[in-house]
Amino acid sequence: MENWTYLTEIKIGRLRWLGHVERMSEERVVKRLHQNTPEGSSSVGRPRLRWMDDVREDLRRMGVTN
Image (cartoon, rainbow, N blue to C red; front, side, top):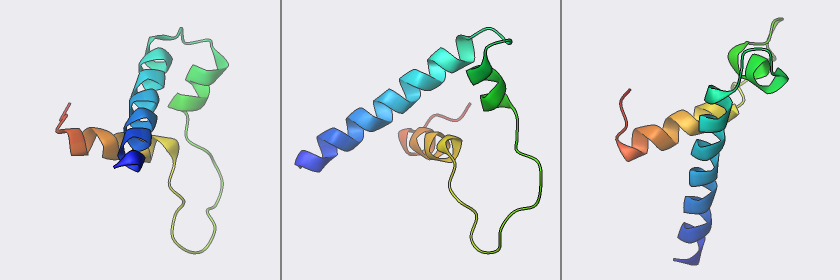
């Protein structure tokens, strides 16, 4: 049960940070990095999970649909 507390805190922190990033002005570097996708070829194998993939999974598990 102890791990559940830490995982919950991590998920809440991720969503809190996403809220900050979404409200940032467009010229901030963090906002531009969040909005852009990397260019170039990808490596062979399973794609790596990105930070936004974790956020989407957290929202899906919470039942947030928009």
